[in-house]
Image (cartoon, rainbow, N blue to C red; front, side):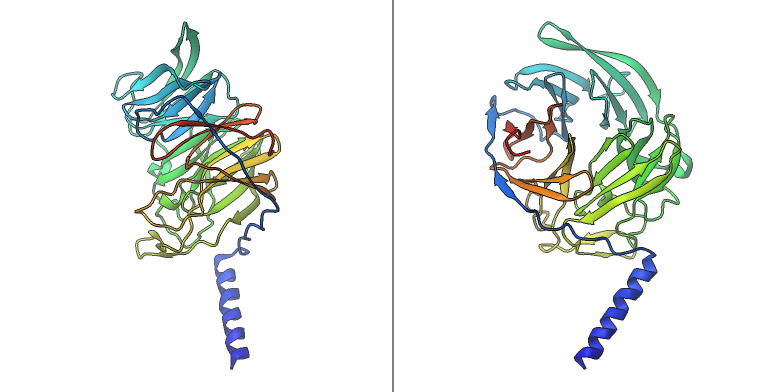
Amino acid sequence: MRHTLFIGLLGILLAACRSTGRDPIPMTPEFPEEVEIAGTPVGGELIINHPMGIEWRDSNLFLIQPGGCAAKVIRASDASDVAIFGPVGKGPDEFLTPCFIRDEANDSTFTILDVTQRKIARYRTAAVGDSLRFEAVWRGSQPTTRDNLLYTRPIRMRNGFYVAQIVAGENTGNKGLVLLDSAWQVVRTFCDPLPEGGNEKSHFQGPLVSKGDTLFYAGITMPYIAAFKISDNGEITTLWEQFITRPLYQVEADGFVRWTKDKHQEGICDLRLTGNHLIAAYSGKPRNLDTPIWEETLLVFDLDGHPIKKIRLPKLYGRFALTPDGKTMYGFNSPEIQIMRYDLSSVL
């Protein structure tokens, strides 16, 4: 009887694999090393909302959407004020829902997409005394795409393509990411780690980073991380993918993915590259909307997805920034908002 039951279950699993038309996504192997590092507070508590992100630019930190503006700029050395950029509004340099576009160049320019107003602008920064001047070097409109596609969290790759997370749109199926050309026109959609998820897209929220023609993506609520090669003609190849933990969920009739409360474990809030390492800010906390998901752990992979090291931090932090040499990390305390600096040179 037990043997018969086992054969039956095996048949069901094999049938499920065949029905999705793909092999099961593997699990991340155990990390071979775990270390702890202490952080150093930088400056005092910041009286702002919890930022949606943090970016390093020219020894300054851009705190993205801290409330009332697109970015608040502070000095990385002491968290003192430098400048405010992009007030709320509908003017040429005002924004309603600003989204900082990551760019591998990491130079003295940055690009903002306003999803609500469908406008895009690129700015150059220049030091003026103790402050910064923001000069618009290009302004444009986000073109209307076929299928009324709405997307956010874009990244610009070295070969000129953009990749963004799909928020809504017609005929997108169960794909969560979109590849756009240099004119912001849709090339194709891709990425379906939960192929039965349907049209609902919230589970695809997550960070993107790139190196050359390789895109790295991770899910915030979906504990998934992957690498894709994007060729110069827009072809996409999955290099590797894995689940950090097995996702626990059910799909509602309308395609909405409902995570299993107190059992499903949250994923990766931020992702960065340094040298030959991919660093992920990992939560691993049970899904419960009454408690914060902010991470206390960094997962370090090589660029082929092999686990290298797990780094424990003493403070809750969320998203983070790295200096160009990859030796120093900046993040937040939570629930109070204070910049923390971490020395990674001894652990990477």
